Length: 122
Image (cartoon, rainbow, N blue to C red; front, side, top):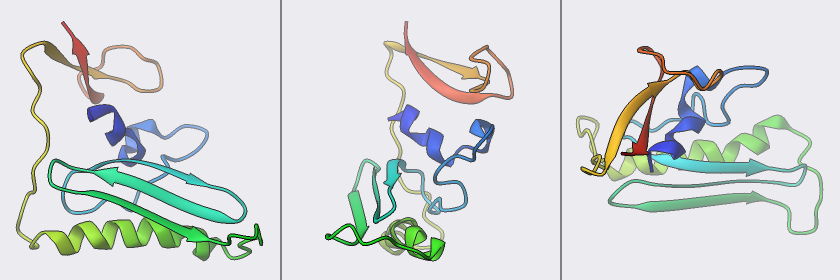
């Protein structure tokens, strides 16, 4: 669950940006996205909901406008924002006793007190 927070994490910025940076809902979610020349999708979740959005062309017609490839990400964000009131924090998973939390620099893979949070088996 925690690893699928990475597409929203600015610390993962390198030669490219995280795929969902700037499209994060107000509540914490984990997600995976994908795009091709003819479609765009995102599937994500939190403890209450699972949401999947797809847009594109069944016949592999190219989506020429980059704005068309953003539609699934915008709808995903807006759906999760509609599911919770603007002041709700929303649920997220708790680390179990069998896991330890470690902050890691996602670029180097080394421990970093300012890094992203990952959970590992003890």
